[in-house]
Length: 179
Image (cartoon, rainbow, N blue to C red; front, side, top):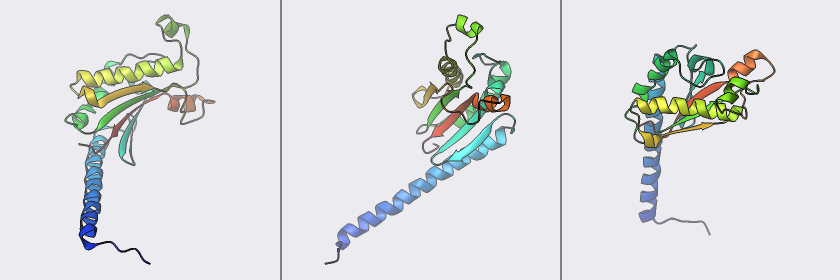
């Protein structure tokens, strides 16, 4: 016997499905608007911007933001990050996730003297530094999080200087509807 749904149930289900599609379209449009705004703000040598499924990711090479082997922002880095602020300000429903990554080169004695004993520590300090900067610019504290991943998620081989440079990065992701 074939399944038959009463008409009184079919209409609400159809309406919910259509409304769900509209929410997805508006979510996509809001993220797309943020993507376009970021593309206009950054040169290719400053950041890579990707629109992924349900999120927007801005990747900064560590040399843009930090001195070699350091975790404090340079004045140039602050000007680069300042371009994010107009895009991120006003967000009420979108999480801002700051992720830090390193290459696999062991931590040197200078960083060890500062209490940084591993690449995980360094990546966490860098992510925290970027998140703190964004908070000082007035972004909503409840929407920002930071985490370091050390050398655990390379995007290139650590066998070459160019590959290690790609692995030393900060990723700022917008996760949510873009509003």
